[in-house]
Length: 73
Image (cartoon, rainbow, N blue to C red; front, side, top):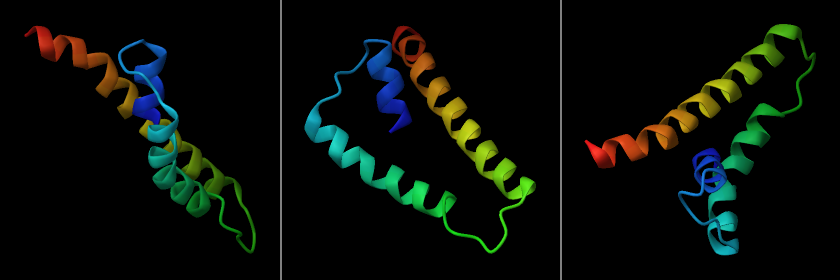
């Protein structure tokens, strides 16, 4: 989902309604896991969830940003 959003933001891909619904399913599942109810929500658990989100966003941005270079070289 993040790759699609970043590619759309850079004008590399078009993001249609059909692809948005199809691509949202894995993101919804990941959000349910990250936001699962816990007995006690502690700082480290939230930090780990945020770190996972940042790592995913970083990798998605890298994938989109390197695409024009891969086509050129």
